[in-house]
Image (cartoon, rainbow over the protein chains, first blue to last red):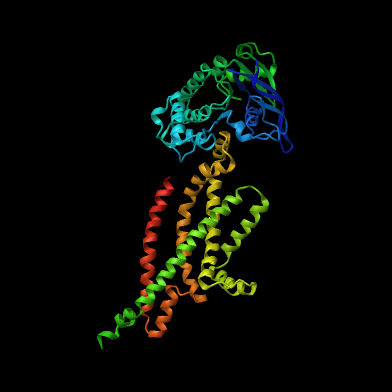
Length: 248
Length: 225
């Protein structure tokens, strides 16, 4: 199977601090891969390197056949293929939910307003928020805002979706709404790379789980393998701390 | 004649008022004209400078910061005098109108730049990241996502500044710009009666009081947004 996203030897330093120390990772079409690990393990930085929100110090990233890390890459073109969902939603507060989703369709893909609105509406409908199209972000709950954030990403029909702790900023009772949308996306065959602290979700929904610590991938495998039969001591102690209700 | 000798005769002399009304009206038009020109060029220049500063290039940002700091330190009167008497020696003699317009535009641009820049800084970094992550270019993100939010934040602090700098058109009288204050002063000494000055004061009220009141509602509305 051809990987949709392939990360090889990824390194990232801030000054003398090396946050990523050689990460290798691949995601095949239709896979849901969850990245878990303690805070500061570099998992968010790794994710943000995949669409060049962070510039890698070294290493190679190939998304859907395009080398993201090539100096000659048209990053604005490649980013349309790599959707991103943020921890803090990052919705545009001055635009309605519909226009949050439609903006890039119009500006980047050059669609007419009516066509963009139609596609944006379909994306909002997919996350169950067609009725909120005219609402501004401040009028929506956190869970609804994050679902608009997902709609904004999927409207561009990306080949892979990156999720950066999509439920960490949510009240506990709103987490499930967002996770349900992600489960639904998986059913529809969307390829997803999810950095998360939702262990139950990762365990139940992920095709593969990647455990990162100290800027490297420590262990990866099926959800059942990593959660039920972890091989590495660091994985075991991390999961044990989680089982005891302590997040990192 | 006894009735005429009091306050009314001195400050609100009907005969003097009638004589100088056309001149005062003309002066008011000049004041409004310079004022509008200053607001347009000053805020636009300030906006352009703030955008240029956000490129993140030191070579661009430093001169802009220097310009804004210097212009905000100098009294507008000094800027007007320096340009009026300095530019001819550089071979660019400008009219009193042009010098007043240019000087006050530069001063307003400095304040507008600072306000818009502060507005841009106040927009969370995630906004630019979200916009760029969907494939928007830096400029598209600036245009559609950052500037609308930054300007909303910049307008309330800027409205008062716009009014106070527009009132500085009165300083044009120093370089013989025939705006309303200069006209009134000339008329006052000509008539030997301060009624024209009172007329100028009333003209300022008619022009600026609505703006001051409007700015209060603008501040209220835009702060909420």
